[in-house]
Amino acid sequence: MKSVAVMGGGAWATSCAQVLADAGHKVTLWARNESVVKEINESNKNSSFHPGVKLSSRITATTSAQIALADQEMVYLALPAQSLRENLVLWQEFVSPTCVFVSLIKGIENSTRMRISEVIMDVFKCSENRVAVVSGPNLAGEIIHRQPTATTIACADEDVAADVANSLATNYFRAFWTTDVIGTELAGAVKNIVAIANGIAVGLGLGENTQSALITRGLAEMTRLGVALGARTETFLGLAGIGDLIATSQSPLSRNRSFGEALGQGKSIEEAQLKAHGTVEGAKSLAPLLAIASKYDLDMPIATQVLRVIRDGDDAHDVMAALLDQPITAENE
Image: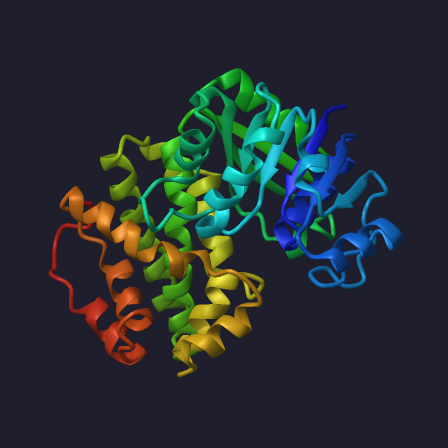
C-alpha cells in the first residue's frame, strides 16, 4: 500500500482516485471547490461529476495542498494543462524530494510548447526518472463504474514505470508500461484534436466512412509528429495511440468529441464549451502543436483545419471539404 495524492477534483481525478483506492492505497484528493471536498468526506460522493456513484471510503479530500502533498510517495496530477505550472509553483515547498509525479494530463503548455512532463521537470528541477505519464482509452465515466479498461504508463526509468503500473492494478484497470514518454504524451495530446475533427463530422451528419478516414489519417498525423520528435512508431499502435484515439473520437462521453459535434451543428465556441462540460484540452493544445509541427516542417492537415474552425470561425462544411482537397500522395508518405 502506498500513500498517494490526486491533485484535482474533476471527473478523471475522481475516477483515478477510485482506481487507486480499489488497488488498496490510501488516497488524498485535493480539490479547490469546498463543496466537492465536503461531499466526498461526508458521503463518499462527487455528484458534480459522477452523480449517483458511491466512492471508496479510502478516499479523503481536502482543499489544502499542503495536507494533500505532505510525505506522499506518488502525486497524480489531473489539472488543466494551461493552469498546471502556476499550481506547481505554489506547491513546491510541500512536495517530498523523492516523490514520483504521475501526469494524467493530455495537452501541451501553450506559452512554452512544453509537454506536461517537461513542465513538471522545469518547475521542480527533478530528473525524468521521477515523472511518469498516463495515456490510454480511459473515459472517466466508464472507469468510475469499474468497467474494464487498460492504459499505458510511460517513464524514462522502466522500474518506476512498472511500479506506477502496478500501483494502479485492479480487477478492472490494467496498466502496461513503456519508456517512450514522448510518444505517449504526444499521442494523448494529438488524439484530442482528431476527436474534435471527428465530432465535427458527426455534427455535420457524416457517417462511418468519414469518421474512419479521419481517425486513420489522424493516427498517421500523430505518428509523423511523434517520430520526428524522437518517439517510437509502435507507441502509436498501442493503447496510448490508436486505443485512446478510438475511444476519444467515438464516445459521446468524450469532451473533445462533444465539443466538435456542437461545432459541426453550428454552435458557437461558447455553446460548444458548455456542451463539453469541462476543459477541452484539444482546443487549447492546437496552436502549440501546430507550431511544433511547423518547426519540423511537418504537415498536419486535420489539426490545421480544426484550428480554422476554432480560431478563425470558418464554416465546418468548408473545413471538411478542405480536408478532402489534399494532394494525392502515396498513403504512407
